[in-house]
Length: 357
Ligand code: PMV
Image 1 (cartoon, rainbow, N blue to C red):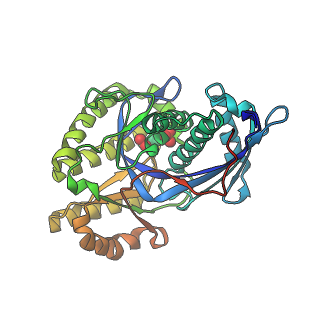
Image 2: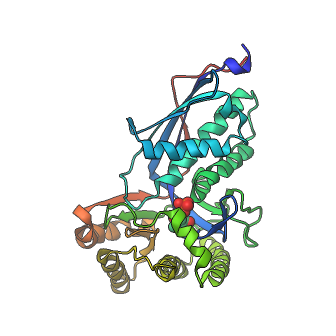
């Protein structure tokens, strides 16, 4: 059989991630204005399956989300496939049927674009290597997936790896690049290796500011230059902290990063307020609890109102009780998601595919 006759199915699962040093501001073709560093989650994942077959004429790709048609999401996916087709010629010779689902609820404060775009990019790189009958070595495979995921959503570049992941050219991280993310798990202190992230849902309303609009606002933000410089410094400092296990320094840096992100959003043209009263209430309670107990919970925020509570495994019992008794009642319908650092994407078993021979 010729390569062009091959058809089949590939599926990948990819986790969401939470940035500790934030990416906020971009230029060119989805390139970051500053490096970022995140922790990949474990239970909050997207699962994406791609069926492909040779196209007769112009390919018509199709997308379904959680078993249903979703024209808005489909338009985004088709736009993405179009954008990367010059980099992946098989996309203009094959027709794709893409099905995806998330294990976490919508608007839960967990960025689904990162997990979805990462799972899709992994499927595409996998299909490409099957069609070309050329298996990439593992580092190249994931690097290519990270580059392609980045073109769909910047933070998706980081979801291609487990543990702690860095994206963006930085003097502090050898081998780093604006084009793709790299894992930085080599010298992580054990206190951070089993870190937890409890996502406290204060509002499940759609975000009033999309991340693309948010990144664009940085172009006219008067504090942009100083922000990009401080993020660069924070990467160096966070790398030191992750290696040394200095939890007090971690708390200080991560909370400062979260509040800086919202400070930038407040200070940008039109001044958006993305925090809710419950966001501030939860932050206050976390800080009070820390002072009273000497334990080490910290918070971070994405560009939205929900709070990510980060904490070490050894303090799990006390912090889980604190969440259940004190924080959950402040959340919308008592909702929170119990997640932790994870090992990264997985290829899922599928019915099989017919390989080119
Ligand atoms: O990947 P995007 O374009 O959705 O931007 C993500 C921006 C933040 O989530 C706020 C920060 C980050 O680094 O993930």
